[in-house]
Amino acid sequence: MYDYDLLVVGSANADLVIGVERRPAAGETVLGSDLSVHPGGKGGNQAVAAARLGARTALLARVGDDGHGRLLLDAQRAAGVDTVGVLVGGAPTGVALITVDPSGDNSIVVSPGANGRLTPGDVRAAGSLFHASRVVSTQLEIPLETVVEVVRCLAPDSRFVLNPSPPLPLPPEVLAACDPLIVNEHEARVILGDALVSERPEDWARILLAKGPRSVVVTLGAEGALVASGAGVARVPSVKVEAVDTTGAGDAFTAALAWRLGTGDSLAEAAAYAARVGAAAVTKPGAQESYPTAAEAEAL
Image (tube, rainbow, N blue to C red):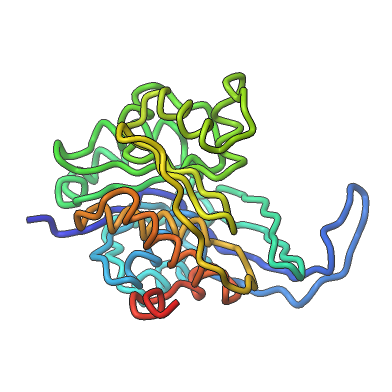
């Protein structure tokens, strides 16, 4: 019996958000809204999203011994996340500078801070968390060497989910563990690199699958998603909503999908559920505060 449905290993950032009429060009200054500060980071977001849906969730991350770090810990605990794996100190808490335009599109610059100090040694020291978790999810806002160590510490029958954001070339050891590898269009293009010989997302999914993952999901925003495995490629339709703010929606999608895979859903079933959760998240401003409960996701 597992203690946790999902262990998230990843980043925890304070999101510093400003609304703008349009994003500035090089050398240009634009005026924006009042600054708002929200708990974020791809790891923190995924953990809160899963816990909000009802998943028993733990987070392995590092924050600074500062006000932003306390904000993040409070937000995790309020959502029901077990923070036993959250380490404190070593550097200031990571920060994301986010501008959001009227259409809901965002641009983000991340200062990793303490996230960059989450080490392979920290992963090894948390071995009991890995053996207690049905699914392990991570991203690339922490060092790649730490993600490699996550793969090496997986329990024999647990499932590994990776969203390679921000995208980097991935070692074969990591690719081979992914079940699934979850990418958006930008991440797919970067990881495919010279292998990008088509503009069709179905082809991207097939080529990515050939690189070694056990399964692949390509998210396509308002166009839904594609799932690819040994059984073939299938399209998952989107849920039509009025987008207010897309910040963190991909993290909500990944968390929901990872959790549902652990409950026994097929990849297509889990992706369809995740699409509902991601759609619900874009209808409200912010990242973690926009994440739905299971009842809210089902009501879409």
